[in-house]
Length: 400
Image (cartoon, rainbow, N blue to C red; front, top):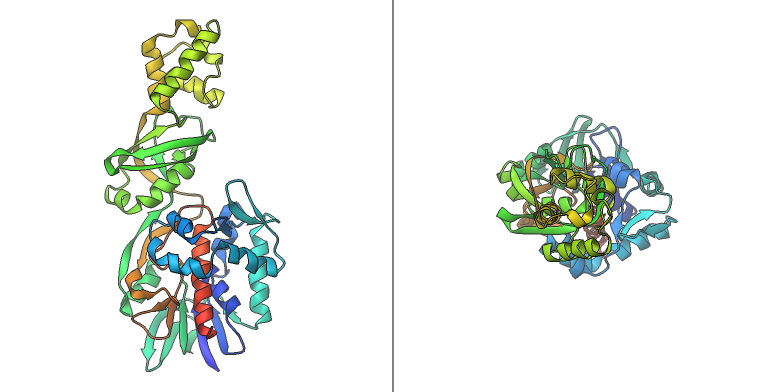
């Protein structure tokens, strides 16, 4: 029986193993850590955001800053609807949340981990943990995999290591081209009086832009202890990951906290002023923002909170509108988004056959997951790429 070695016991490796016909192959999964599926465990704040309710491949690829062209054909064969079907057939109830992210009903990543472990057990697939691969050598038609736990001979290799520099160096040694790694999906470090002591304040919909890059994104926004986060920031960080690495994460970002034009904001203010002239400005609810944030806007605009709305001057209105609609911040660095470290860069996509995720350089060698130069914005998309790529590998090995 032919031997398959899967290097990397994460999402891609386990999904691949779960879909290979075990009657045709002997399969071993090698994982360098003491636990498998570590990223699955922490994903979605420990709830595991397995995919996203976007069922049109052409729309789905729009969420991938790198790999969107290549993934179109992959998603036409296996997309989020197929992922849902796969888990539901294994008695995992799923739910689609308001923002279209998909989670197990249990709200626990352990449900997903247990499903994979159960599949592997039923198929009698061997999993070797604390088994770090040191080198892969080509031996005639086979591969010799040298590890800290001895040597393994493989007819087929499935490489799903994630994007560690060590695993990419190994691929370079085997002749693959690697695009340098840079972080993707990160929050912006900003020190500014407007944000101070307001960590946890959120905005339902904001617009962000990096003028020097002509880049714009919108979505929910969150003030953190370090600066700004939330989808509006994470999306722009993903799309501009390479450019922002070049400027060493020092740049200006412009934020519109209320997603209204200056004219719209001014009109709202003037209408409120007419109908509530005697109200104090500090207690006025003019825009859809929290009280604390509104009062901070007034403080940085140097406006007395006890002043009556009727007495707010045109100049003061301009100061408020500028802070809400055109606030410029200096970004001085980045922070990792939660524990979900995602990178741009990895194995060059030109060297991959996306019909079956095989290497164009190495025979009988398949590659999937974050080790490829593919990444997505937050929301279950990175996992979906893993599931779809791994599915294609399994189908190819199964001869389907």
